[in-house]
Length: 133
View 1 (tube, helix red, strand yellow):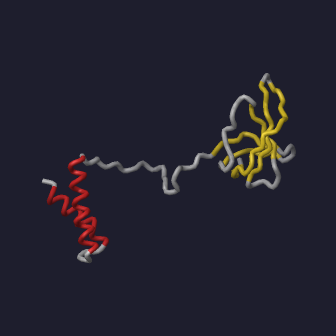
View 2: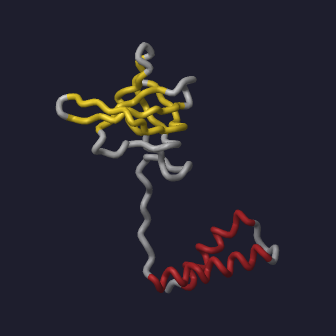
View 3: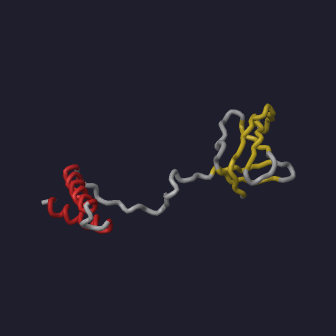
């Protein structure tokens, strides 16, 4: 199976019937092929892909047709990975406020030049342990 980005989808007026199903022909331009290719899909359904989607497909060069199209799902964000995330216990509202106060104090120490940026997290945790009693 090949992969390509859909650059153009043009619905044609041409239809045909196969096993009592009406199919509509589409002209589709893909990034990996030089020419526009033909694709047929049931007329009563919407296409499963749209312009700018990446698809995998089979290409018949003799008929200039594509078949077995499958949309390739991309993650919403570039930094997404499928590994299981590490979950941490969520703080209740009161402790969350205390942690914010500790971070504010540590960031103030950084702004005044008393600590480095790398030490902000350590100082935040130290302040949090002091005020979380």
